[in-house]
Every structure is written in C-alpha cells, then in structure tokens.
Image 1 (tube, rainbow, N blue to C red):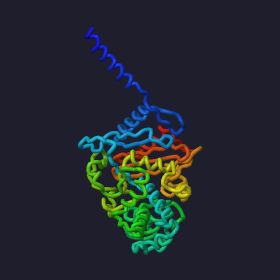
Image 2 (image 1 turned 180 degrees about the vertical axis):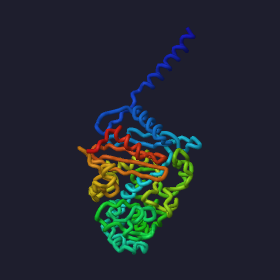
Image 3 (image 1 turned 90 degrees about the horizontal axis):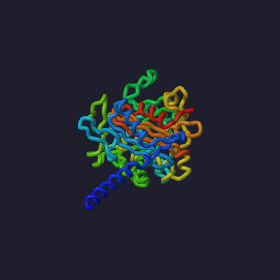
Image 4 (image 1 turned 90 degrees about the vertical axis):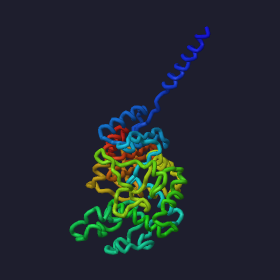
Length: 378
C-alpha cells in the first residue's frame, strides 16, 4: 500500500506536466485578419534565416497596438557562437530617422524649433555656401526628404554638369521641389538643434532621452556610446564572417560620441516596437502634431525605385507612406554594410512589425515576410 502512494504522486506530476505543455500556442493576426500560430511564424523565420544565411534576428509583431510576438533568434557573433538574448542590441541604421523626427516634433511643441523657419537662420554652414539655395531649407524639408541635398556628398557622385569634386557640397534641386533622400539633411538638423539648445552634439542623446525615451517608457535606445553596449552590442557580418568595425556605418565623420540621427541608433525589436505602438496610440504628442507629422508631404515619382519596389507614394515627416486597398502603411528601412532593419505599421488596423538582422539580408527577408504576413500592395 505504501508503494502505491509514491507511484500515484509521480503519475499525477507527469500528467500535470503534460497538461501544462498542451496549452494552446498563441495566435497572431495577419494583415488580412487571418490567424496563424506563433510556432508557425517561428518555423517560417527559421527557414528564412537558414536560406538567407542570416546569423541573428530580433523581431516583434504588433496586433491591436500590443506586442503579440517578440523573438531573438540566432547569434550575436558567429565566431564565438554567442547567442542573441532579449538584451542584445543591434545597429538600427536609418530606422534612426523616424525616432529623431518624433524628437523634433516634440521639440517644436515646446517652441525649441520652428519647423518652417529656414535652418540657416539658426546655424549657417560655411561649407554649404557654395549653393545659396541651402538657405531656404527648413526642418519640414529635412524630415520629408525634400531638401535637394544628396544622401551623402562624399558617397553620392554629383552630376557631371555640376563639376564638383567628390566630398564637396552640392544640391540636386530647389528645396521642396521633390524627393531627394538625404541623411546629410538629418545631420544638419541635429547640428541646428545642438546650436539652439544647451546641448552639444555629444550630449544630444540626453535630450533624446528626455523627450522620447523616458516619456514613452523605452529602456534601450542609444545614439551615442553607453556602458550597456560593451556587453550587449551585436556584431555585424559580411558574407558569413564577423565584421569587427566598432561603430555605426563607417561614414568618414561618424564616431560613438557624436549624435547621428541619420543612422547612429542602437536598439532591438523589443524596444523599437514600443515607439511604433506609441505612434499608433498617439502618445506623447498633441493630436494635431501627429496629423502634421504623418500626413503625406513629398511625392515620390513613379519612376523612383522606392515607388516601384516598395510601393511608397509619399514621404511624411519621418516615414515613407504606402497606400493599400483599405489601409495606409507607414514604413522605413535601414542599411549598413553589415546590418539591415525594417519596420511598418498601420494607424487604422493597429498592426505592425519591426525587425533587425546582423547582415545585409534584411531587404530580402522583408519581401518574404510581407508575403507571409499577407501585406499586399494595390
């Protein structure tokens, strides 16, 4: 009789464990309102990572303005086989731009900058004096990519007709005349903000923390070096090999102590997704500010790659805009030599996603992910 009791207890424990393991897998609502299991999405992502040879992925999915899926899959460093965790920090590349745009809008509400005032009046730039049209550029032009500036003067070769040396400032058109994607414009705006506040360029991260991070409850977002990154920064990879550069995209002027709104942000999906949810819920800004920020500004011509490949028809203040049959998608991508990232969200359906990978395969992943999530252009 005494032997039966321990055996019975063991049986009950095993049955209890089985019951716990048999809990239903959480479901994820796709963009067309169909549903899949969390396990199905994880299987898809693992397959894509294998086929695209992606070392590491940080991803989050939003349903009804809530995180329903958040995973960190793979490796932070293929050489050491260090696995990703929820604390791993990626380079966000140009996903920096939307959060900086939010910061500018917050600053404008405080009277710290007038969006329509030419930046020249705040901070003249002697190197831009070669083209006096730069004096008409304002913050709206910068955030909507209509400055007329190149992306980067030392990277983008100027048209031959301009007859300027590589690295010399030039303009492609008049401010406000059309879409000219420019990281250089974003960095100019950051210098203007630094000159118009008590913060230096090396200290603007403190202003970002005050205006964006703390109010939105985001723990890990860094534009400049932070002690946390020593242990948690993910390594980039090129052709399956670890790239040992130290910071950012490797632009000539960029370093870990200078605030770079065009591509210096370091974060992960778990943290960035909080910003997207804030955008959906109109947190931290006045309702009219949100309308100003997200309305269509700059038209993207049908001949442009961003129209043909991504379906973007306009740019708002910080985001590309893609009209769908019954909805509108706000989106942005980011690229460094060894990192890529993508995000998209809908204010209407409260659906969205963001991901970061530590190799240059994010664009390819994004194409298959949109198909999997049932996001189809018109």
